[in-house]
Length: 275
Ligand SMILES: Nc1ncnc2c1ncn2[C@@H]1O[C@H](COP(=O)(O)OP(=O)(O)OP(=O)(O)O)[C@@H](O)[C@H]1O
Ligand SMILES: [Mg+2]
Image 1 (cartoon, helix red, strand yellow):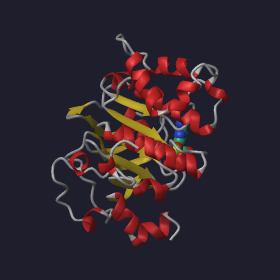
Image 2 (cartoon, rainbow, N blue to C red):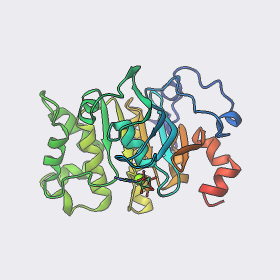
Image 3 (cartoon, rainbow, N blue to C red):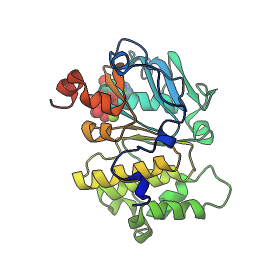
């Protein structure tokens, strides 16, 4: 581990986590679910998003998701709640019928996903997030597709973060274990040197030990100053490392608060964390 000052789990360095001295909203107000979550300090925010697929019905209903500078924000909720849809909406893969997406103070609602990558967004989707028949290194090179400069330094940083990928760099990505494939997917997204990283279920299908390991790496990335917005099925563990948590139900904000608040909220515990 890197720095003794960061002892224990969680993204707890106050100088990174809370540069502006914290929210003025009380936890009770925020976890009520009645009001739109605040996005004032957000580095990336999808605000009041409504929309669905093609001409189908709305999946998202006035949904607001945001991540602040230096923070980890986590979206949890039941299967089919619209978590991936919210991520796709923020990344520009869904036509919003209402709402907007703001990145670093700029409204990017009209940008294509590729242009959002150019603007500094890295996205690891829930499925098909690697090229299985390409080597690990080729996957990383593909990740850097928008760059015209020297990518070797970034690749070394990815290999430093995930040393196993350096050992396996000539191997087909599809031959790796689930946890290693997720490392390739995250590494690929890091190759564009994003200003913010979005991860849809980065620990899907991995063992608890590998999940812990991946969370540690994700915290490490956040500490380099890249805010992280992630969807997680492992709600309890994810909220433990979350500066901010969103519980989505049927495409709408049900509960919002710090990870700690949500873990302590009786209703959230009963309905979403198994008591
Ligand atoms: N490509 C699509 N076209 C049409 N409907 C879709 C599409 N993808 C998802 N949906 C629908 O949108 C709703 C929300 O799905 P979504 O994948 O966003 O949920 P989720 O919260 O990510 O679920 P999970 O926990 O299973 O990943 C579901 O009713 C789903 O059937
Ligand atoms: Mg999903």
